[in-house]
Length: 339
Ligand SMILES: NC(=O)C1=CN([C@@H]2O[C@H](COP(=O)(O)OP(=O)(O)OC[C@H]3O[C@@H](n4cnc5c(N)ncnc54)[C@H](OP(=O)(O)O)[C@@H]3O)[C@@H](O)[C@H]2O)C=CC1
Ligand SMILES: O=C(CO)COP(=O)(O)O
Image 1 (cartoon, protein in one colour):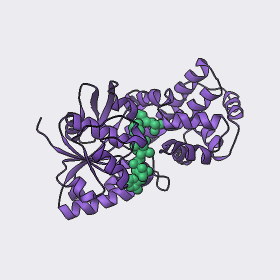
Image 2 (tube, rainbow, N blue to C red; image 1 turned 90 degrees about the vertical axis):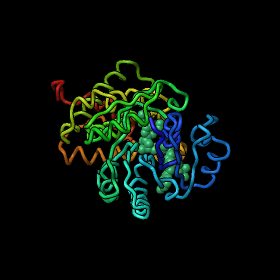
Image 3 (cartoon, rainbow, N blue to C red; image 1 turned 90 degrees about the horizontal axis):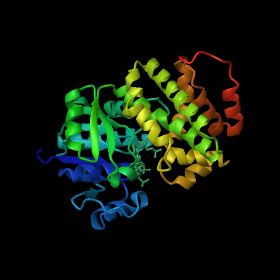
Image 4 (spheres, rainbow, N blue to C red; image 1 turned 120 degrees about the vertical axis):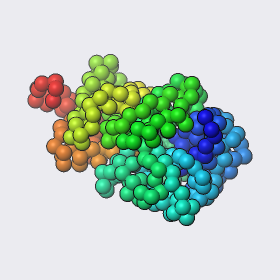
């Protein structure tokens, strides 16, 4: 395949790992980061120690704090900043694309919902970037810890766009023998899956630290996936998406691994730390904490029963004891499994 230019917005763990994948495929990759110290480290030492330890990145990757330089000529732009920065960065990107009079495919790799609007990353991007500068919009979802991707642990993700030609272009540019990209067209389902699994992963971390066993973990996985899919149904998402990489796949990876910041946050909450203490200790984004609040609101607006997510909400936002909320979950009125 011809070499193309790809820009990655966000110099954290996921942005850097994705940049490395694309650079391994022979494409010209520029990372945009807002901190000069990280940008300099990537350019000079080819590492990003704060986020990925000693892993050495592809030497061809260059980084810059100048957004215009990063996106100039990029056919594909990956937006890999946390949810809370997505709208602001998309707005800056719109200005850059306007200045360059350039049209690019924008791919969101963010997993969360904007707290004030309940919008997904792809929606924020579409709202902030004028249609004339968007050659397509897609998301990347699925089970993919940056730590695994950077060490070539075989990884599968899905490129999702309503325009399958766009998804296939992203698939071709990003796939290699350790990073296999599928395609899908259910963007709502994929973004919901990516956001909601973080809430269940927090619950899984709490179960782990409280020494609950396999039965409890299986119950959490199964019933957690069920409520993810129920909310998906209210959004008109395909139930199959929740059976795929963006659903059960990502739930499994996130809710079983200490690579997951959400899982680790859940462990710490289970140990009795407050959300403020957990956030301070992590030093990286824990999307599930704000997503839990959004899901609490959404479950009410969409009238979907989400008891596990609600229990996580009570632990995080009402300081309730995890053991008591678990007991209350078990004591709820009995009902049919399909609900
Ligand atoms: N890590 C992973 O394995 C995966 C993460 N994701 C998703 O990717 C998204 C990003 O996560 P991840 O990379 O892990 O997060 P990190 O916390 O590792 O990094 C976030 C990066 O975004 C930067 N940033 C924050 N705010 C801004 C801003 N306003 N302008 C520019 N840059 C900003 C941070 O800069 P600074 O260093 O200054 O804070 C940091 O470089 C999340 O939604 C996450 O759920 C998805 C799949 C896998
Ligand atoms: O989404 C992820 C893996 O697919 C990363 O999860 P965390 O944000 O919990 O680390």
